[in-house]
Every structure is written in C-alpha cells, then in structure tokens.
Image 1 (cartoon, rainbow, N blue to C red):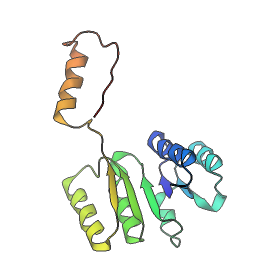
Image 2: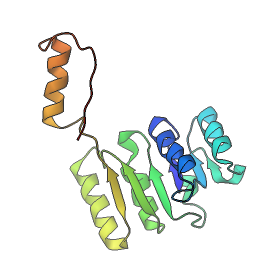
Image 3: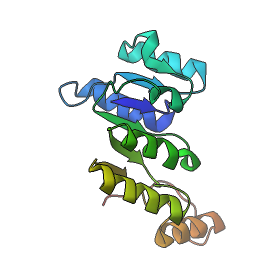
Length: 152
C-alpha cells in the first residue's frame, strides 16, 4: 500500500504493516512535511522514487501498489480517494469520508463505477452521543475525569 499522510493515523497503519508484514507492506509514502516523509520512508525502507510531497505525484505514474491508505487531513480525503479509484487502487479511507455530502456521494459513485473497494475506518467522535458526552465532561457536569476505558 501507499500511505497518503504520514502523520499520526498514517503511522498507525505503518506500524500495523511492520507488525504484520505478511498482511501489509508499505511501498510508498506521501507527506508534505519532509521530516515525516523521510522518517516514514526510513522506517519502511522506501526508495526515494517512492516518496512524494504531494498526493497528485503518486497518480502521475503507473500503479505500483494494490491499495492506497488515505490518512490525510479530513478536508483532503475526497480528492485523493477519487484519484486512487480512477487509477485502479483499492482504498483504505480514514474517516470521515469527506466533509460534505456531495463529496461522500462522489466517492460512493466512483467506488461503484470502478468496482474498487473503499474501506472506511470509522470513529465515533462526530456521533451525537459522543459529542454530548464530551460537552458534559468539559462542563464538569460528570465530575473530574480520572480515566476512560471505552470498548465497543
């Protein structure tokens, strides 16, 4: 897979690849921050020609992986996902799919049209229940928070 975004979430997926090399191998990285890109490349033994500052550079060359991991900032999810689908990649898409309904529908349409996989990694931080719980905690309505253990 090629990781688009070598920040916190991208590193989590990269760590999975290191722990389970028979399941996932990272073959490319995109990150506009040189130190993050270089650190990720070194961790995964990537050649310089597999490291990019912008995600558009990945899709300017022939396909060289099975999948793309989109772990860019939230507002930069839809366009790289759409480009990956158009290039024939399956996509592991960090949540949210996109910030607008129109972009979400575009991703759905592209996935259906290309018959590619878009696996969305969901968290519940935007769900009303968790937003309200966070507000209550911030207001001190529940008391002083000592620790949290959450299991689904």
